[in-house]
Length: 80
Image (cartoon, rainbow, N blue to C red; front, side, top):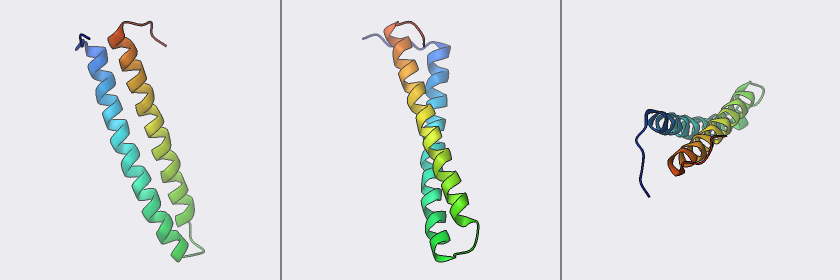
């Protein structure tokens, strides 16, 4: 399998890596803030934690999309 280092493939890889990192950090912060929010009731910490968790999941989804798109470009299949 020959790997192509085209600018589009490199760009997708970079975007995917950034999205994966942002997703991991957002999910981790969401759990930490959620635990704090459970201890400190009556504040907006739970809503903030849920927002961070959703943001992290969306970022992970985008990273998966970038990975699939990049693999399709490497294999020479038509784009989505």
